[in-house]
Length: 267
Image (tube, rainbow, N blue to C red; front, side, top):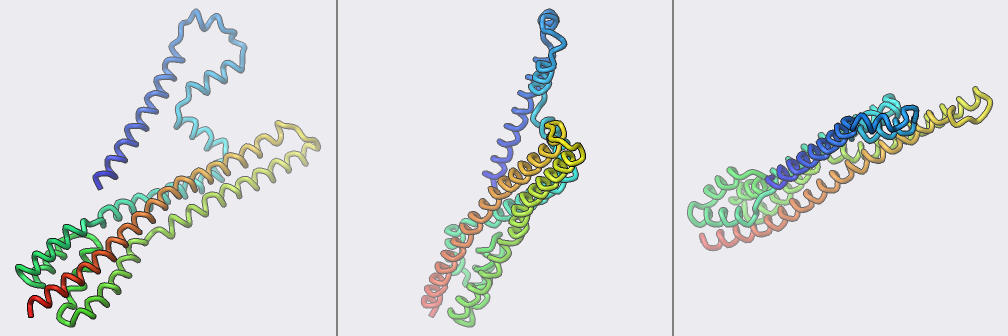
């Protein structure tokens, strides 16, 4: 959890730093020597456009491209990004909270079994957060019914905990597939608009088709960018779940061994 918060803080500082650099560049271009400005021809459209582009910050460029891509098609892609990131961040926080130091927990359970028996061990697992501790609790609740029932309980409840860990991933996967589809739909509609303009004008002019083609390209790029971002979060969540599941399986085997040893020593 500390690593996650540290990473988020680093990304926030980097984002603020880039924004500050962009604003500084914009201020420096706006405070040039008046004599130098007079030396430059004022009727040069190319220089004016170049200065305007260099003075824009990253967020201003994003807003401009969003408007140029037509909010009708860009808004659904943006909604996919917002919802997908919200679910992904919630899953990352939940998965990091579900991570347990299994070796430490096993040591505590074994010490509790030796000092206070099964009831003391159950108090230890109930006071520990995470799916591994929940599986331990369910297994020790069946201790009076024999080791076989403990194993069955651990396996059954392990499947339940695994389902809880994977909750929400299907929605992230949906937005990963949906964002490029919405972008491609904007592409097709933009190309249809371009061909309609050509048909209405009766000739092929770059000024007629530029608007439709621009909408088509921007919506496609936006959809692909959203899919790439969400795919990174999705793969991180999947790898984290695999790590937790492996820890659950290893810890469950170790728990059964500890319970067998305790059962034999108590006889």
